[in-house]
Length: 185
Image (cartoon, rainbow, N blue to C red; front, side, top):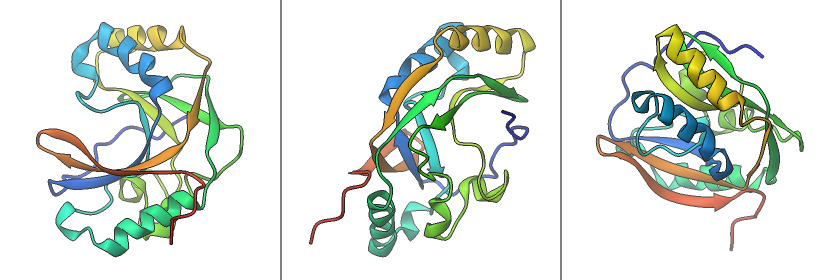
């Protein structure tokens, strides 16, 4: 699998929001990259798949927007995921996943009226766990690639969607909602 060349997302209003699926079982991948070079791993950001980043500036987040995230999460079942390869692109190291339940996590964001990374990588970019960013040195990239490659394949489970606020101080969870569970009355 190839990812499009990594291009940073244009500046986003801070605080911004994102819709993610946290994957605790994938944390060892980030830990391995951190042991290679701590500067390559985003501090305070857990292993996750971004469904929608950026979502909206926090100041523009409405009850309707939050309900949209809850409805989105309810419409997709929890899924077993398999991370089994390492991909690199300019300064970027990631582990894309295969979804053994074939849920369409990448078609979901368009139901919220937007696309991941503002559509920079198309409407449905390859879903992945970002392991390292800023790995511009080919030697560092090779070390990270080898370190995380030794941990694959890795099974994980996508069980909940989280709405987070990205602030100058880091990521702040706003709420989490389980996948595939209808919202209460």
